[in-house]
Image 1 (cartoon, rainbow, N blue to C red):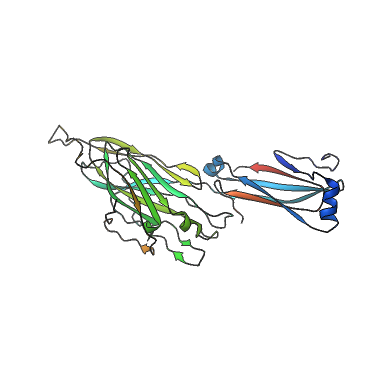
Image 2 (image 1 turned 60 degrees about the horizontal axis):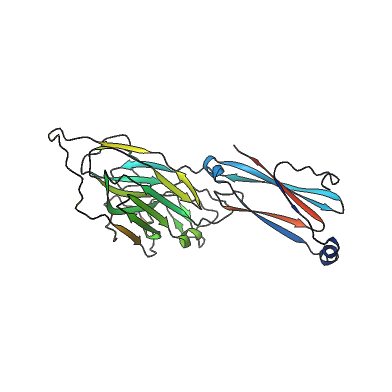
Length: 311
């Protein structure tokens, strides 16, 4: 059938046919009713990690004659989260002490830089999380964190959140000190309010205190719309005090706890280089964002094929 219509699919394809051609003809062709076929697709996670593009073309067969549609190309950005170690809370300060020394009992920050999501995309952003599995034998969470806009963000109502704005109020944090886990999540309602034409990127500062001697590594996971992306691994070393060859035991005065921080929606504020407040307890397709292919049909057999090309 495809061969008679001079259609030769390349790669994977879908085929749509009428179960009852005569009924289909009477219900749609005679009445001049057009049909649109929507075929949901999910971009593979691997492409989100490498970036690339994929193309799609549809065919339609009417009374044995084959017709082809235009080619649609979807671009997938590479998501590349980063991690730093800082001594300040100023988003404008790019100093990074990764690979260097952290003194015993020193307070410092893990800086989690989320992946950037370009604008002009086809689907809403609904998940943007920071998952940090730190080494609780050497680091003690102080109970304080901050989240800042890394890029200018435009909302559907026209509001612009400037880069460097404090966005902690749009997040929640789940903390398990016993397991050394911190998960910072943006509220879904806020993410869905971000304009499809706007880029989105955020960064989080998690404040720690070094409580033991040794070398400690840390990697975090950035989850965006159901796909996980790993950051680089940072490493810091805390040497023994030469005046005291027996380093003190880690501070375990506080009982390990599991706590969830929830914030009310608040107007974003510009970032300030100050101490953190104490917390209480259309052309682009994305990540696994849902791609949609629409095919206008009149009668008979419709076929679609997809071929993928990676950078």
